[in-house]
Image (cartoon, rainbow, N blue to C red):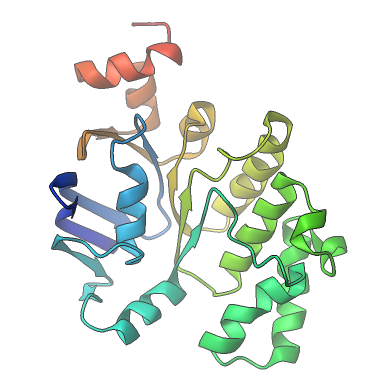
Length: 245
């Protein structure tokens, strides 16, 4: 069952066209990794999906509904399609627990007592329960990103968008975040992941999309993309990862 459908999506900044007609269908529970060179449009695609960037043209359908009509509808979409950023985007003046309960309390109007209980459960699931009263400045990068994932989960999303979630981390912290994402994948939630972690994409994904110059250049199973890519630019990009070609 398709949960998300993107039809002929274009995004331009002035005269620069970043997305050049993206077509994509995402099934419920599917894990899709999006790879490609810097500037290929990967992050812009994610930001358009929940309207952090407004598409220039084309449509994005969530459960066959086009949300690009009013700000109220876009806000509704963001409760079901949440995003985890590479730079964490936590509120520095709020502790971990407060970061988690702020959005669902304001947007979903859920009772604070119920939210606190839920927040502790989610923090426990990402290994951050003991840090509930800490401010973000007292956390490592890996810990901040695990909090950011927990915050996304507080909205009961159907899709989580990950925009290079490990790119701002020191190498020793990458593993702890990837482990959380692997556990999350087992829950059946739909995930779209922009990543440079090729081993992770190969291991975790149901499908891998290679973007090049604003288009979906090649998409297939991880096995084919990484072991037998069909198109020359994909082969060139993956040379550093796979020495078979």
